[in-house]
Image 1 (cartoon, one colour):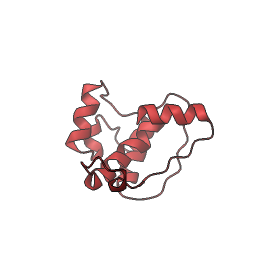
Image 2 (image 1 turned 90 degrees about the horizontal axis):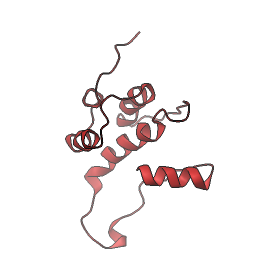
Image 3 (image 1 turned 90 degrees about the vertical axis):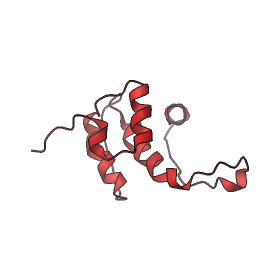
Length: 102
């Protein structure tokens, strides 16, 4: 059995994400976040399943944001912001929830 993850810093997230997580009060990753974030940061594929309210959105959004950060553009032009991630959700309500959280 693996050692429980005590902080987001142990997962290899960037300083910018760690600062933001701290500012919004996230201290300890949930089990699905602790398992998924390192796998996704390694660029591997993953299917995760957990109950509602366990942090699944952050489990994929945090590594996604970190992996996209090097490609960020300060330009206001839409042409300089190509789509790099597509998140599919089964309902409009869930799509809105994911968009608001990310």
